[in-house]
Image (spheres, helix red, strand yellow):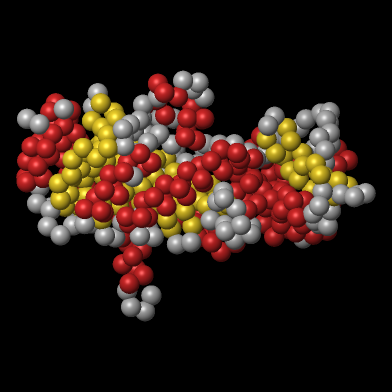
Length: 255
Length: 129
């Protein structure tokens, strides 16, 4: 729970090392707005679903998805946005966190988040256009089974801000910070020789490979962001081709 | 055949490669450097000495691995950096991982062939050393 001088500002619910959701004062209607937008159901009907779930002790996500009101992906996305916005609100205020054990369970793992995923989403909300662009670039550069993170360098902090993640490997939030620092310092060194847009590819030693298919670690500058990821044998070539395509498109008159 | 002759012969066979060098990463010594044409020697030195950072185990992955004995972990066998102007690539000498061979080529050089050639050269350096 987050408390300020006298008041309870909000709470973050954690189960099994994953974040289930967060609530912040002043954002109580925000989840309804997000779900109404995603589902097309009107606000009164959605409030009715909320109340019904509370009375029956049924998790909201399971209920809405099983009733076909919203897809699982859309529900998860709405919950992620709401939780990230709540965390940003809680971290904005002069509040302190207090751990409070709570009985019971019932959160579906598919509707819970790792700290890294949530951190990237929360920081990404501070750079909406850039985080969307970098997220699209992660999708263009990396494939199924590969992981990647996009960062924005922030003059106020030594650690770059993670703003988008992709893939099924989510390091801890602390490690995400270390990945960002490694990429920033390596790309700075590479930039001495290569200017402001180097692509670094490092062959992963066998002892550091997480899977047989991923054999390289890549780090690159993309616009005002930085991308780091693990990729397979075709990855570096794919990324180089992508960069060449983007450069051609950028140079084409009228584009 | 000694290190100098090995590196010079290799560079003579690849007109598309601008420079080649060999670094002892543990001692911090540049053991040899061969540069073609008007390529800046300073540029090649920077590329060579960058090996200690760019062709090294990323520290965050060591944590992910959970190993207590970090010295026993392998270093990357190779790495490269590419940009609009240059490609520079590293290949570690087999059985002598403190030695790194560095090659520099203009962007547009066939990357796969360049890296394969550099790996082969690292093998030759290992036999010559």
